[in-house]
Length: 351
Image (cartoon, rainbow, N blue to C red; front, side, top):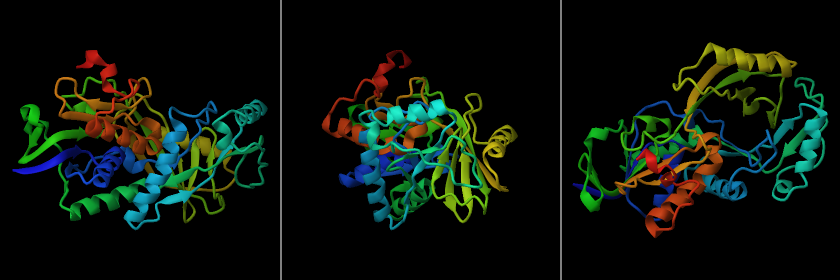
């Protein structure tokens, strides 16, 4: 029988950051993760501290932002990668009223750190922006898929990674002593499965709604953007004349199959904003683990405390993940209570 502190199920963004928490505190663990479609693997990776639809800061936004920047910079260095790109975001204004809302927001506490209080005239001959643009300060792009690949290889080399799908029927509850899974004993098991939570018999009644997002990858040699551009959708430079465009929101489909309807929606958008030729070279899709109240799902199962959840990161998972992993670790190891707004105990009837 092999004994570890924790078993972790899922090595998307949530699983990776929690495993890193365990590594930082010298805790032993093993990860189970099969080859499955994951929203993390197609995520744009932008850490944007401003909700650009309403010009507000998200929940715990500044705290999450600062922690995420330092976390991903440190992890990139550990993995010997250049996975953090400084990337300003230009919000393309839709109207004069949109401009005014931007400048009003730039005077608000918290927002004034991230919103540049001047209008950027559009000098581009390839991108329409008749009302000008505003710049989001300090934003970065994280190369998530690159980090996930390198981190999984690191864990394989450490004999901490099992490349197989998790079998819920093989999980045994070991009384007050934790769990046993296929010859591995741990004091707790962390489920960081994203939308696969719907298959988890211990947590599948929780209101994980999920919404499908799709991106186009285009090649546009004449576009020459150095910043991410945001109006209805993002246009994010990837280098080598490639750009990531999206993502769509689909609340009905819960799979990772690309669709003609999403491609048509994104191309219709591009036809309105681009003044240059482009070529579609790829299309990607994933289901974001979103919740009805737009808050994450953290904590111990109320009846089986050795079963623990880290999920519901939603559309801002890149910025939110390090903060949530730290909260959960402190809760498990130091008994610090979770805020009611993120704890799964806010849904008592779901257990």
